[in-house]
Length: 454
Image (cartoon, rainbow, N blue to C red):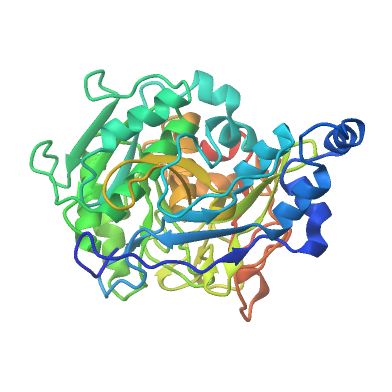
């Protein structure tokens, strides 16, 4: 959540390196380049296409610049959204497309509108997580709720642009697929608008569309980014019938969290997801609630393996990467059995969050609304996982679906992420990926639906 007033300046990230000259070969794989591209370059020397070596050099030099959509350090009782908008550099998707065409990757220019996506789209997300068949057949009649602060006046229009571009069915107020309400359920008395949170809202809506295109979408807008107002919005989403609720925000833990648990997040029969955070190792709330599925973040890259993708812990720097950690206040749920943390451990599962391997979003409102953007942060992974739950079907009425991935722990239903870290900590698995459970990625990322059903 935020501490400043709406439409305040945002905090910009520094330039980050994605690789080095010594990693040019690995960069080829990262960009989706393989032996076929080498062969093409060797047999078409007279062609104007750029050689694989040149592309590798470009990839090795690639950087992404991004900015936080909301305030970086919220005051007590407030939270920030966990969305990071890429404003410069070359994304993994752009490298992949350049490799397929045999040309030099383009770069994103700060605050420059793009006429086409620069991040991963629905087919990429569905492919990476084994969801293509389910996304086509499942989700009808299910509602995924998105809870955010402030109003996005262009939410429905931007959603339509995203879905139309990718050939997804229309999701509008008129056809009953989309609805937008305040934290009290009003469709007319909405919060004040905010550019940063509008970008967050677009990210959330687009990730539901990408993952579960047949799902209905309910957007509930809190009047501010306070814990109480966001929690009230969660309750309203459940009251209106949503069985899947995504929360892409977080703030520091406090002794009030156990009260917030029972007041806002304890809803049997509802799958509630929460972002683990974007500031590296360290616990956030509401991800620390034992009643939610805490969602960490990964770097998602194309690969020549049988899956076609590979993942590692998302870490950009010592202060930016997926959150994780041992809660100071929340009790450990019965289904968590790791022994290093006596209280609630974050995260449970994970999905793509690295801005450098980010997702495509369309947003047209305010200073962040430059059209097609690439976004990262665990604000991307939370709605993806909420939508996977929706594809898997309505949870049992007395269940807390955060338990479901633990029932499938160690099986092929989850892609175990075993490399990378999000910081330094005294207990290794709190911040370092390893075989089986670890803090940054939980039990891993979805491989189909089996880990998300009771």
